[in-house]
Image (cartoon, rainbow, N blue to C red; front, side, top):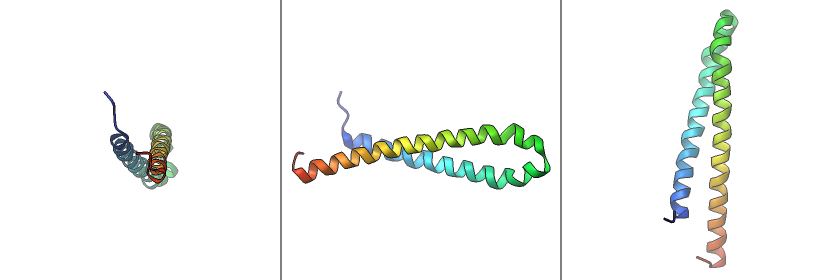
Length: 86
């Protein structure tokens, strides 16, 4: 079964948007929620901030990878349409 580039582009675009949105919300949650709590309660920092920060970084890397894949597919599609090789 052959998968079309159009389907792959849509899947990568959805992954990129979802992962980026999740990472941004997660990082904002860390900074705004735990920022003051870390100053007052040091145990909150130790229990939550490090694992959630690592998860946020992993999500940002996944967003970068999916975004790069989407960029490559779109670039290839544009190159094919401008050269006439559909």
